[in-house]
Amino acid sequence: MGQPNDLLRRARESKGWTQAYVAEMIECPHSVAISRWESGNTVPSRNYRERLCKLYEKNARELGFEQNKAIVGVDAQTSPVFLFNEPLSDPKELYGRRRERDTVLARTARKASTSITGPRRIGKTWLLRYLRLMGSERLGRRFSIGYLDGMSPQCKTVAGFAAAACATFDLPVPQVNEGLLTLDKGLRVLLAKKLVPVLCIDEFESFSGSEEFSLDFFEGLLAMTHTSDLVLVIASKNPLHRVVRKSVRGSPFFNIFEQLALKPFNFTEAEQFIQDKSTSAGFKPDERDYLWTFGKEKEGEKAWAPLRLQLAGKILCDEMDEVRKNPHYRQSFVERFQTLYEAVMD
Image (cartoon, rainbow, N blue to C red; front, side):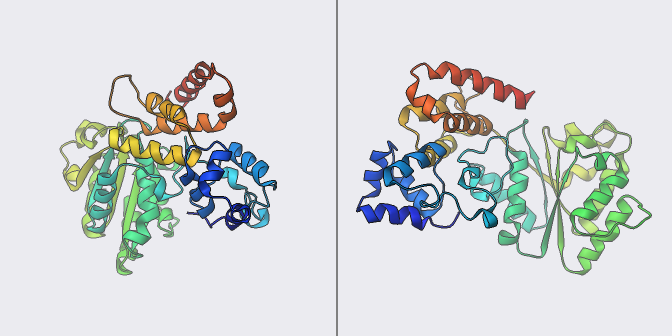
């Protein structure tokens, strides 16, 4: 949540206008959007900022839309309503996933490891990011949460993995890197300080099919969960027993995880997302229908993909004037949506 926009609120109050009246004058379907803009919960899109400036006969700075750039560095436009293909920066933006969020936090608090699975672009990385953002608040400062991307070049070898893992916990890496032994020594330092290391590993498939990451690697990680209180939270497209090499599948490594399988939003989750985001963006009922329609992978299904919902909303926000002026806009929307979606899914 941002700071309240007192300049925007005072501009309205000086006119003696209600929030409902302002919403009507700028053709915003919900007065609650005005409330959210004034309280700093969200910022209006460029289209609505321009309408508010015209209505109040003030410029963007006078209405609080352009803050001190020497301090902030950017204006309000960099706080979009829809986060398509962007990292999670605010835990409040993680919609749905209530059970998964509670489970991963609860298991981590008990020093238990978790496996997050699901197809590409379903939200696995966001859930890992959510854990990192909420860790100090929900788990306490004794939990030290690090993150590794299995696709990074450093993680192509066991020694590189160990060095990267040490770095994410701010542990020194000796000149002689002994692989997992180096990591184990570092984790014991954290253990002596009564800190609990939580290692989030994204793209865990990267350790599959390589002779470098043998049975010794996985059983070494398993051992550290017992001897050094290491908590593993890993993300992969498929369940662990299908990810790693056949020679490792008999290992007890898999027994320490509870699997959380992420799926598309159900109706209730999609409804909450569409309602909140449409209100913030000032969408009209027919514009909300774009989210309901294009948020689905297949027509007729009662499942909505988070990425598709974010993309549909982003396009509408970017092209709001065109949406409301061009009666044939829908075909243009379809073409742009398909192009952008296919680009990130290929």
